[in-house]
Length: 348
Image 1 (spheres, helix red, strand yellow):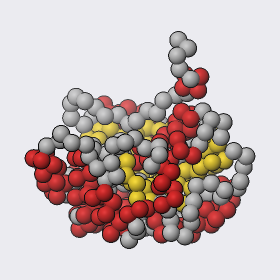
Image 2 (spheres, one colour; image 1 turned 135 degrees about the vertical axis):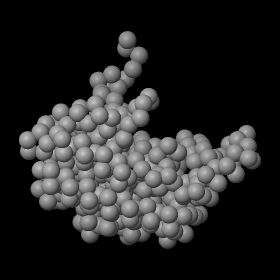
Image 3 (cartoon, helix red, strand yellow; image 1 turned 90 degrees about the vertical axis):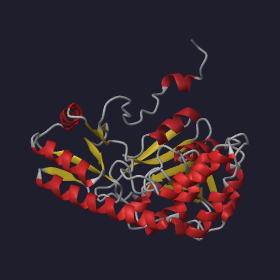
């Protein structure tokens, strides 16, 4: 047609995990939290609905920023909210990376990063993880046109973590901002949040979709020094968070007791799933997220995925050209994991 920019016509779009619209499935494919959110979320949303939706929301999500700042022990001026963390990834990329410039990311990692670079007409530079799931020294090297680096931490699809000490050492050497994408950090043992105050090029990104069970609400936030926030504000949509999501997210982050209880359950189930998959002959990477990566020496992951789907259990089949193929399995309830394991025992 010739209507679109050449890089848009040439690129592949991002493909999210399956979201079946009909029938009942056990969904273990998109890293959703299997438990309902805090009851305070429903109450907060209901209160907004009773007041009405005729006015625009607070463009800065001030209520959330104030409460999150208190919990995280940072200044509210260091927090920027978005329509899910993917919105914030888009804002960051649009603000920092131009056509022909370079975005760095580890390999394998979250596939959306490369899509965002393609939209910008930018190049991606993928640096492979080492065998121990740390990054080689060249991840922090300067290179021509390098404007931004993404580091999912814990990583997807592996669930592995680069320590804050290692991230700090990389940030000190890097000539550009380094985003620690901590979508799964509430299931992990360490966080890079403390690095923001000491490094003006470190950005920590978080979401309410995973640990707070608000994937359907679409709310995320980043923590960075105010000088970076000021520039990102020029790029974000005027009202990128709606009144319902602001109220729900604020209520959710306020209920830290619920968060602690829920993450303990998910981590316990993760430990059991890892152990029982190993007993079935799977090779499972130790995970610090709410999913595990699993491969089987005798069975094709694609075939296992198809057989599970036929039995109405969804997991994520993933294949990386320069790595491997396998199954990424989200942590469900104990009952959902029992159903998965019962099926797998008949398949391997």
